[in-house]
Image (cartoon, rainbow, N blue to C red; front, side, top):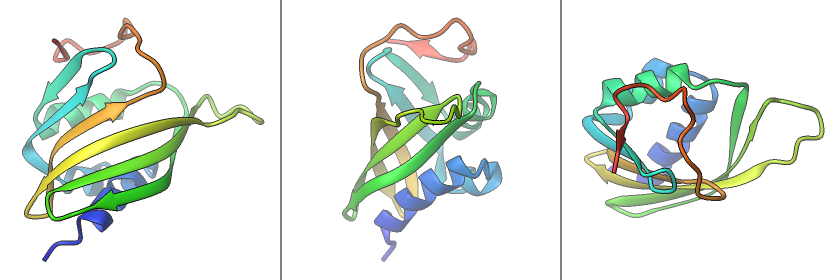
Length: 127
């Protein structure tokens, strides 16, 4: 049996390390990524990878809590952007669906609803 808690922990750790190959290996090829607060969605591992590789700023993630069962996971994490000394981290939470040790869906929640920034790639779908 796959340890989905470990998969979710690795997802955040590899994202923080910018280990793109390792991070992408945790994703199902047809993964769906959603940001409900800005009503955006990405379909597919390659586009999700491109989105994260191009994400601007000096951002950092640190896991606070991970809970998982045989089909789902939740990660509560601290994040910062900008890397300024004394910057207070903000909370984020991500919900995961997993099948056979691969992440098939990620739904990210950030502190407050917002309109998507102008730099979003063309492949981002608004819903």
